Image 1: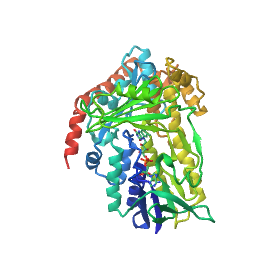
Image 2: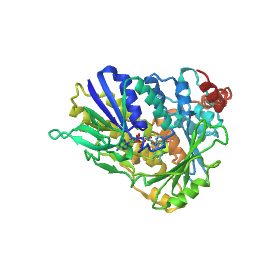
Image 3: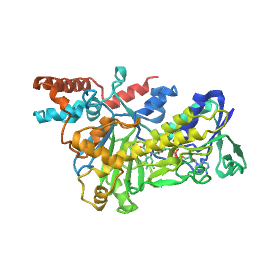
Image 4: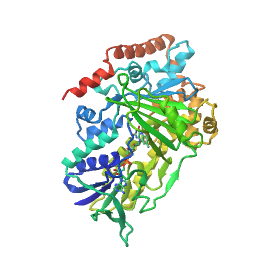
Length: 490
Ligand code: FAD
């Protein structure tokens, strides 16, 4: 049996342990070490749709999971004040309109606008309209694309129960020393302060920002991305729900960063993300406290971070999963998703008979890094493509150089209205279109195929899509009622 040792029991550790135990069964032994005294990062609430698939893959009952994690449904993110102070746009998980294989719906919509169709691009997206109406239901054929807003600490606890049933052994204690094999340089064992030695073949570093194994012992190195994503601090706190939870997360920009608001079933998660060069802790806290609803339920949780990625995500016999692998601010709720991608990749590249293949390592690192760079570019877009010039922070963002890959995407869209999804990229064309238009990038032309439609055909096509969205949304129940009913059912 191959011995897998998971260091750390936050969301990353338990997502990894649960998935490996369930998938690999008796071919592996899984031991997870965690320290109650150290605790977890204590944040992480907003997710994206692939988590639905992850849970299905593990055979998790959705209603049970939602009860256990106090989850609500999420249809997207409402961005306030990003283009300019006072304007907003919505990045939904849905598909807008109807496209042709040669051209996205935005081309038809732009042509329609030139012909006097005044309706907003948003009116053609079911998920967006449902979110704004505060409605939700599962529809046949997975027609509604959704994710969850959840308590990731409770998710870890839920997965722990599942993993322990599947045979994962949990060891409590602080890892004091990482023992390396003198010959190979691989990790041989973890030594806990209580004297326990835990040996293994493959080690998953899920120790959070501490990165105890991958950096502390193996010195994998770190690529710093703060010149592109300059926020380096956050303060989180929870408040009671003062209104029924809405099926979307809010990201409200301020003059040195932004603030999140994430409604769960029983409370709301709030946090301010900021650049400490332009805003100090006290001012950030005051700003956060001035823009929450209800009295705080928890003391403020201050977190410092450095945006970037571990240079080697898999090094020797150690894989970094979760915050130990790097961090990007939760603007598009991608951290838990990166955990999911890493865990599934580890399972796909599980070493045979304990022998780690250098080819697997290279492939894993390429794939994981590509995911991170694509997400990084998408996040930078929110800061770079802005008309805000009202503070030194926004002036710095607007003036910064961005990766060539992002410049190509922005300029291509500006000139032609086109977006291409490359290499299995997480964010599909429609996500890019919504955010680019929301941030104020206006395409200068549309695909000529849109003009193949006669005026009549164009009118009818656009009206049909809009009416279908309106009719469907009208028939949906209120999100909060649906969650209560769904989670109440067994
Ligand atoms: P942690 O939760 O820090 O867990 C580390 C584990 O390692 C703990 O169990 C700890 O006890 C253990 N450990 C550490 N050192 C030792 C030791 N010496 N001995 C034994 N055990 C040890 N993600 C999203 O997807 N959506 C969001 O909305 C979101 N919001 C976020 C907001 C902020 C401000 C931050 C910082 C992160 C956010 N994230 C979000 C990321 C998300 O919180 C993490 O990806 C997720 O919680 C996983 O964390 P982790 O398990 O890697 O680390």
